[in-house]
Length: 292
Image (cartoon, rainbow, N blue to C red; front, side, top):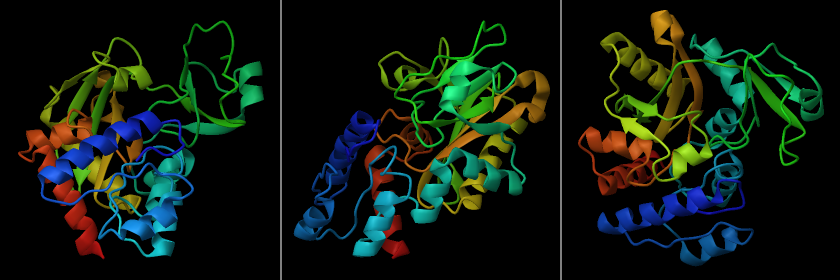
């Protein structure tokens, strides 16, 4: 847990909660804040399985997965290729599009160019191509006077994506099963604060949407999970423009390392499906052990 990414604090929270749940489920647990000494610390403890609670770059982009493969340690969640694909938003869209799944049009542009002019007709969204948790997201509305003034902390090249209006929906997939559909209700954009600060958002589960839309969400989430080659637990986020019916349903992204606190979206769906948090963590560990 932890690690050096922009999502370090979220990862520490996930790791602490998972450690508590795993102990409740009967496991012996050692908590490791991931740093450059991770290989030595893993060798010191010789775990039966590594529970990956890292978020963001290095933790869910194939890097730590490659390290664990090289060292021969069994680990939870998706493998190297699926993690790398899902974290690279452009390549993930390519895979999902080939699988016949609905995604948004986008392009990769130099951040300097994005600051200088509209590289796409507004409205559009600017974000890093390989970060999660809505880190560094800019919305450029149709009436914007000029291009967005991106922070200096943004990468040199960014994704510019067509803006998708509508409701925020999400589906957790466990193995080959969709757990449910949640609607995320916020006052504005579902940004980092809305995700993680108390009162930042409200979760409606099951989402109050037509049955055919809920069925399509579940089906597309499982297909996206499979198309990217994911394993264990994932969460697929959607936008749904209800004025367009089924044609208004769009996949935003697939998260291979979804938030893992008892009130996070995926564990909430598991609980709604009858699986409490310790049982969910146990399933994730046993899946990793059986996979080996």
